[in-house]
Length: 142
Image 1 (tube, one colour):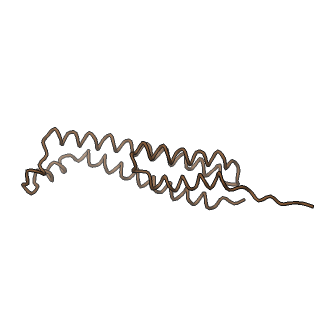
Image 2 (tube, one colour):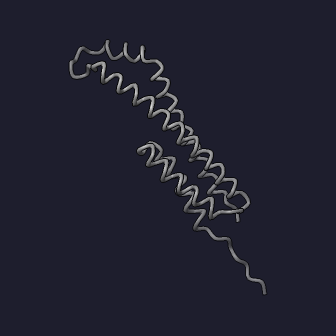
Image 3 (cartoon, helix red, strand yellow):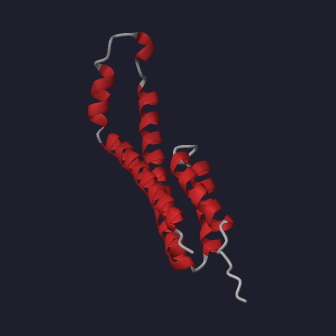
């Protein structure tokens, strides 16, 4: 039985996780360019409701750093495990194990990233369910 649909969904999900890693890298870039961000925030409209205190700015920079690393690490792990699952699906070797890996990665990464990876996780989830549900056709010999 060909597992083309599961592999294609896995590739689309891996591309989604690569995009998520790009978002994490952008967050780290923003943290490293704090002068640019600080200039933009201080030359604002003059509205007191949009002014940041220095403590709030430092907290925002710390959150950008931590969040960026979490996104990158979870995305790389999801991509690697997705590739492992696709290799297991190739040639219909071990679809049960591949399906379990796809489903587990989709759920864990969606929870860890607080919903950032949920769209890519949907592709992994669908691929995992298809890998578990689809059974090879049996031919009757007489």
